[in-house]
Image 1 (tube, rainbow, N blue to C red):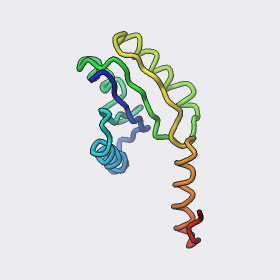
Image 2: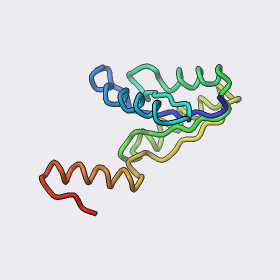
Image 3: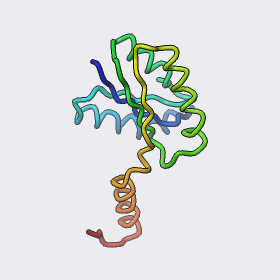
Image 4: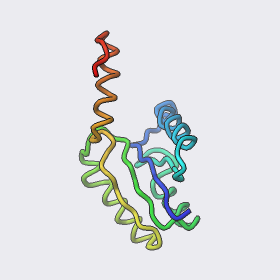
Length: 126
């Protein structure tokens, strides 16, 4: 397994908060050939640190980290890059790349707009 994708959510001490992320990861794991892991920035396990350590032990050479955030706020501008840099130092055998958050992808914006329009009773566009 030379490559893996890590889905990174914020984290919460409330297990009910984590359920949608776990369902998303399970659905994606069935759909993708790429090895996939779900990790949390804080307050939840598996943490990003735990996940990267496990992947490094499994022989993964490269992992991309996809933040499941709407936008790049303080966490994605400072906290997560700091975590990734520390993890790269701790696990030099695995190349880590932090991707832009999903909320910046045009397809995400369109999907979210469609859901909101549907909830507002508006007809689907397109």
